[in-house]
Length: 222
Image (cartoon, rainbow, N blue to C red; front, side, top):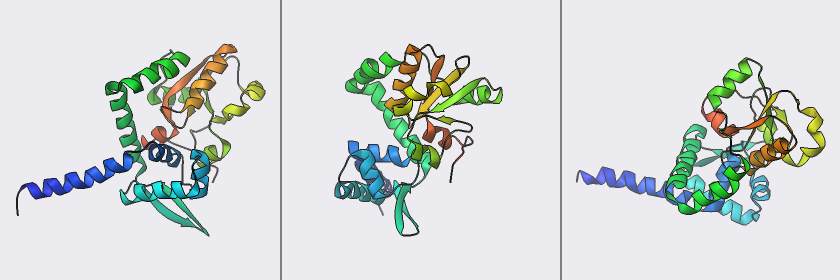
């Protein structure tokens, strides 16, 4: 056997994983699945895709062993096949894009950094602040995502409800907002909105999936 064959076989398998990542819809589906297990119907609604298109993308991800299925009663749900590894892979792809892709850099500057010029709070810093009772953690994801898993003690106010529920936030205590991940616009918009109203607010450096993947404690409603 040629000494190059094992290496080539590995590269071919890795290429299949890379090909599975090579579509914007599949990256978005992975982001949704990083929040917790979902059915095809739920994912198609979240990603604004048809059922058939969603199913096709999920099958590609499943063949690449990026997602797996599980049965709960009569329902078949999809979930990440290895939360920590898949989330790390997505983050590595994002960091590479931010460094090497001009369009990604432009969007980061024009949209994300324009809404939040302050340095985000690291996970380690937030752990310390929570231990000392120095911050209120705000989860701006939809309620059903919050129920699947969230940071300990987090207050869930979906972004669309933020304006009418401002009285639930402390005016004299720092608020740390988080969302689905580093490119989730909801936390950026929440930070901009709250700062315009005089709240002391900063953003967590990434989101719930990265917190969970780091092995930090989480809570769930189910």
